[in-house]
Image (tube, rainbow over all chains, first blue to last red; front, side):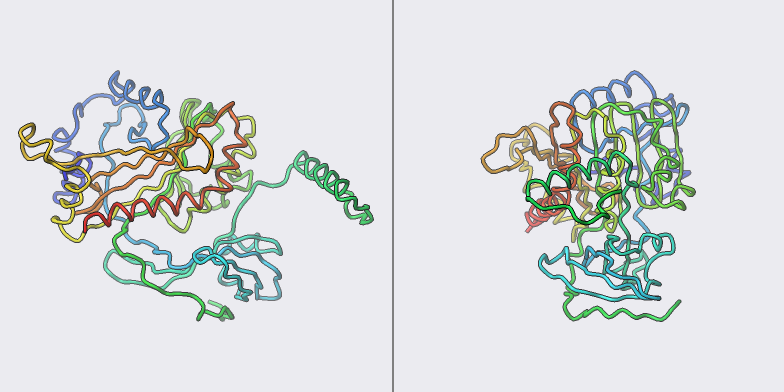
Length: 193
Length: 234
């Protein structure tokens, strides 16, 4: 296999540091000392779109007067390796405890009721921890670049936009249509908004 | 730190070791269409409850103009041009949330015309040795045909395409698999699995449906494809 220009640049960064790699940049890119919005780069950009490609774009738009260079490609400082992941639904919040039903996304079919401390939930997500709230729960290893491995757990709540008036009207119409089709009678006054 | 009261029966969880070769795992959702980049600002996402307030406050805003908007928060980077929406995360614990964020965004921008969508998983695998790195290159791109044409030919990039399999249904949707030497891991292989969906009639609802129903399967399938390719080194 052959290494790419990005990799060559990354290796240069590794060997000499970013500043020196920048000085050596003309070894790795075709036209280093010009504004990146050249006819050539525009053409490449337009042709990428014209092909209708939905691959992750390689041409990153940069501000004028910034040299176009490959991104710094250092290895990440740590990586969370997911071993097990669950999707959970909050059933009840009682004092400092959260009771939830969790469904295993790694081995479908496993459903379990769990109770955990709300301390496990990040402060910014606690407002979402209400009955019906949906979250993902990840268990895994947090591997750090120096070699240390930590067993780790993360609970992250799903976020959806707030319901809008028209969404509620649409949902109500749909529910009414369903009730009609099923031949049910509406007795619950709470159905009215 | 408060007291722990976790009562989950942890015995049912399999703490098995996953293959250690996958070093960097990213996912991206690309949508082609017609966009108004100026809208895509951290404040807009915060105002609509799509990201945490503190994420919006700490967002790294690179540029916001009528032509292009780029910003990043801790777990994703967003780039919106007038014809392309690109969002990417390098954090596996946020793959599901990436899809939620796109669904939430376009549920609000419900009249956005769209023409195609790509669901991408980009993986950097560390190879055992330079020999296995070369062996994989030789296996997927045999060098025989290049003998006498190039001196010391080496694989730089290879893209294979195949139709997306759907039972009893003709489709223009395809899977593109790109294999390259990893620019981030040495010796490493970069595999980008692009699941390309053609969207007819600017049907944004189809985009949302695919994301809701297929995102998880697409990610799993993409990983399977990559694992299959990596196995070829043996």
